[in-house]
Every structure is written in C-alpha cells, then in structure tokens.
Image (cartoon, rainbow, N blue to C red; front, side, top):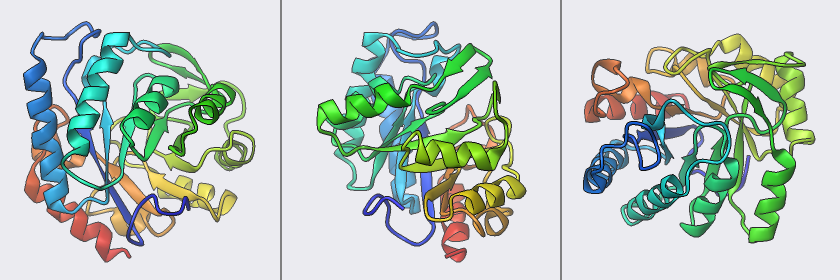
Length: 265
C-alpha cells in the first residue's frame, strides 16, 4: 500500500460529484453555485468520517475522451484548491473521461494526494469510444513535474469492455508491474452497481501486496463481503439521498457507511 496515503486499516473515500463545469455542454454559467455545492458536499463527507475525498467532473457528460477543455481544468483546479482549505484529508481527482494528464497537473498544483485513472494500462471500448491507456505519458509527466501524486488505476473499468486480454488477475498484475500504478480499483459494470466479490478476490490474489479499492456499489450491507479482500472503498451513489445519484449527499448515510467500513477493520 502506498505509505502515508490513507489512515486506518480499512479506507473510506467519499466522492464529490461536481455539476457541469465550464467547457461542458450543460454548463449553466454559475461558478459560485459550483463552489458552494462542492464545499457543502465535501463538508458532509468530512463530518461523516471519510478517510479521503475524490472529486469528479461527473456532471460533464457526455464526456470527451482524453484532454478536457482548458476552462474545465481551470475550474477543477479552483474547486480542488477551495476544498483543500477545508481539510488535511487526502484529496484525489478523476478527470472524466481518462484525462490523467490534467488530473495529475491539478493534483500537483493543489498539493493533492492521488488521481484515479479509468484506463491507465490497456485498451477499453467505452460509451464514448475507444479509450487507450497512457501509462507511459502519465508516468513521464509525473516525473517531469517532480510530483509524488499517487496513481490509482481502474481494472477493466465500469461503463466499458476490454479490447484484448480480459482476465482480471492478469490485467491487475500488468497494471502494477508494467503500468507501474500505485494502487488498483475494481468495480461493477456501471456507476452504483455492486462489485462482484469474486472479482475482488481474484485481483487480491493476483496482487496481494498492493492497495486495492472497491470502485462502485459498496454499501453497509455488502461492506463485510467486499472488504474481506479489499483495503477500502470509494463510495458515491449510496451516500446520496435515497441512493439516487443526482441528489445531494445524505449526512446520515455517510455516517452509516463510515461505521460499516470501520467495523470491517
């Protein structure tokens, strides 16, 4: 496990889903609303007991593969900087869809801890088209920036199917050994859908010494089962009011999830 990235024996990372940002088709023109919503949601996560926060440009769908618009990068940087003033918890960034370069630059500039890369190593066919891993470029950029931001890579990411090898254990090994990721994320087929415990076990057996997080579908009812093999979970959908993705975070659900994960420790 990357040393010093998270505290605690089992990790609870909460997600801040941002509304549409400048540069996206549904941007509404209200920057103050974006900052206010992000601050409110992050505060609920912090107060509820998360071990870390990941910020996503979730509202920017439909997503462009690769580099996002400069105005989107600028806004995300402002949001992350604002939330960094709220907490010393590790903060991560996921720039959809698969813009590891921008995520890494933002994380480095804001002194954030990690990025999530949906396709770091390999090739996937996604809703948006063919998504190719850019491990070489991402690692080279990190070195040029003199950054120690950690790279957490999805394995056969949700909302996509593999082009090429589909053995989960093999892909996990190659993502660590050849893609040089700092940690792995395994998820279900789509946002909010439960991750198969058999998949988690397979990845754990293939990479027994590396950080492994659940990337979708974790809830208090399945935490014991999933965290038997994983080091923690990234939770977004279940934390929302009634578990509905486009609703605000429910503070009671954050506390419930925190207790469930700590119980697995």
